[in-house]
Length: 364
Ligand code: NAI
Image (tube, rainbow, N blue to C red; front, side, top):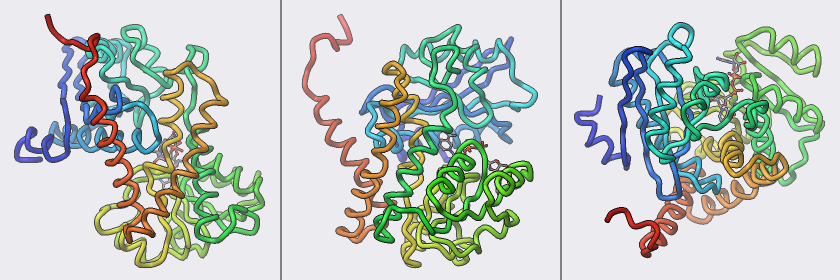
């Protein structure tokens, strides 16, 4: 636990932390608003059986900061926030709990907009929607944009093509070999795209139904989950867990590119981004290449239009190219270059807010 929550907020640059409690529904939630320079804070609600309160606070602070970077990199007009609900998603969910959460979200008047994340579903937010307008990622039948896995995979594919072009001279996936970790909502769509584009796929998933589908329907080669790091390939694509790029796995990789949708792929950014660069492996920063889901919900807030969302998601490719160019020019890791571009955008747009606008007057 940080020595003081305020110290930690100051260190990471947070604006606000809101503790939400509702005795009848047993809601215990923490909303963290990191940075609203670009607009209202946007970020999902995670439900997790944290071991204690400190873990929940730390997670809320860490995740909301990550959302600021992701939203800024994706070119959206949203800031970063996150909500964590302290509870077991298998046992503690109820309609009152999500309605109580919805009321807290509503009380923030649009400063924070939320939707699904690990442990929560679109159905949970149908309940929350009864109390607040400030929710996204609702099912299509409720006017939302539905499963964000589609746009995440779409942006990921554009990002991978940009990586192929940068590193191997052509975006063409024909004859290229991909090692795909995780065949969930994103990974299985990526696999389909790889196969449609004439690439070769080696896959791993702890769920044997997914690997059976991949082998049976698409002819993918299946390896055990632990063996995926050792597969000789052009692209290693992590689409399952965080922290998979670490001291133990990076020396085993036999790829030219790491590009996947999983969040927080680097166990330690400061150590493992240079370690990848030192092995001449091109790393597509995770929060840039996996921004498709965020782009989808940001577009939902403007009035849902699939074509416009796809267009925005495809821009991940050219943005990665900018990152790679900056990294080469400034002798930075790709992670440092991405962070730098984000900080520049926050800085430049933060400055325009200094001019006085009459209708934004806040008091008397
Ligand atoms: P998912 O939960 O649908 O799929 C994850 C898959 O990984 C499952 O099939 C699971 O069995 C497999 N898996 C778990 N542990 C594994 C292991 N040790 N080895 C191999 N496979 C393993 O998740 P989804 O939606 O496909 O997302 C994938 C990753 O991308 C997650 O890290 C998620 O946080 C991230 N992400 C997803 C977005 C989305 O819109 N769905 C947006 C941004 C990030």
